[in-house]
View 1: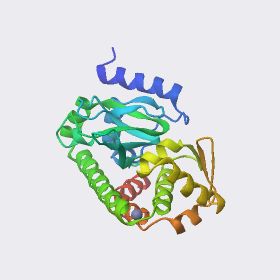
View 2: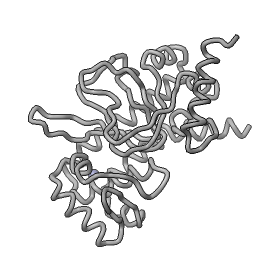
View 3: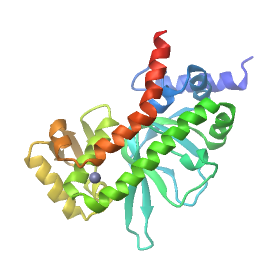
Length: 265
Ligand SMILES: [Zn+2]
């Protein structure tokens, strides 16, 4: 007779076998791979695969957060909406993080929303189960809190970036951040969404994207972006891309290195 955890684990493996691009039954979320084997296996019992379609809500403003998501490919956007309907992206999460930080911090909702801006796939688990797992493992909580710090820094950097840096610089930064989280140089991105992310009108995006296209750095056709020259984009991006990346490496890079060393022993 299988116990509840084993049944869950088998359900997960069956579902993964069907849904996974890589049928290796391993999580492709970097934060999950940073957990020690024991924590990772315990968490996998509760995780189920989920397709992340464009604009799928991951949680809504002021609504109870039902699921915590670990993105494997694609990007989720933290969006702050104003009373007049305008909205701006204030942070992004990809395969380096977890979506549902209010749950980690002891709450069950937030005044901002999170939804999918670049389609992909991921894993999700019930918020309640996630909270229970955090209580069981101080090591897992420590990794998740480090990521929370990374995300907080990213939001702070984004706020300063919007004040001081040009639309083209921000556009380059955003494209580089997204490329880091995707399995290939080509990904889906509508004009409308890019405008919202950068907090500008669509015409502004056309000017910035057109300039990058003419410079041979990207190709943009019918909502599909291809990065042609990564080094060139890095050269035109503002300092914020490198700052956020360095913060991630400082706070979580060593966790990954420690895990890889442990595996080699
Ligand atoms: Zn910047």
